[in-house]
Image 1 (cartoon, rainbow, N blue to C red):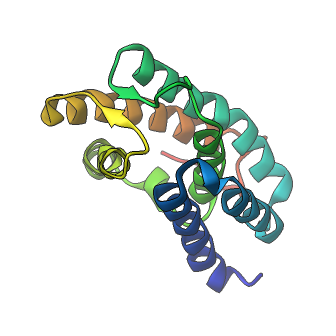
Image 2 (cartoon, helix red, strand yellow):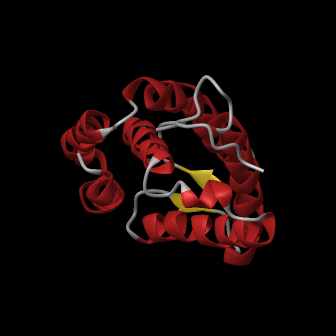
Length: 172
């Protein structure tokens, strides 16, 4: 796929995965799996993206396990539902393509964007009945934003490693 369209395509595919979970909940496995397959097939750097997703998944799931363990998020009967694992895979592919600019922003922009915006996605999920969050809302936002920002910085570091990095660009 031409680079010109890959960012938009990747962004649309991630939104498809996210909204599938939002509306279909546990019935979203097929649409999300299809989305992940398309993201992989359209990747111009399959080997390096696969490595990033594979290793990055441990970071993403660690974020979720920490959040569940400290009581910030509750997914019901499952510690981490399969749809969430799949959504993380789609998100990790997006970090390599449509969301990659976040890795390169100066921390004065990166920190508030990640810290303030990420909990909003989970809050929306709680309103859809996909999960529940800590109350009061402001406390959830602070704690989960901090957990997510630390995880994001780990993913950013991982993305900069030479055996995974897509090109010769090094994150400062």
